[in-house]
Image (cartoon, rainbow, N blue to C red; front, side, top):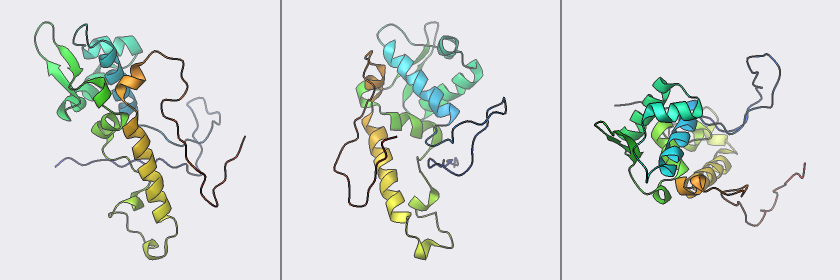
Length: 183
């Protein structure tokens, strides 16, 4: 059985430092490099789906990504049923479904496994404070909201050539005790 990796998506107190050693902004929601490349690949396949199947080389060259890493990402997406591999002289990869039926969450989950902001939102996340934890339920709701947004954004939307800044509008009434800063 393959082991799924869980990623933390909540900001921590740690600060990321780039290779140059200069301080940068703390990381918050961050996709793994493979998930990012998976989204790039799937968007590329959506944009070229009427033309031809695309090879790992073609996609890697277009975006300046390692061919080896892109091939691994595409193979993983094929194993998970997001893309299909076409063999032969005109072979390559194509989307397994219409781009409107593939969500960002489908791609991210195919590459990284379950998207979790913290392990305590699952039944496996027992720690010494589980019984007294005051944030487990709010974090579970945040995790559900993130999953909801990622499942709403489709590859078709990501492939549209628009100047629209937001793919998904997060709206709703502010809950009692909620605060928004206007920085």
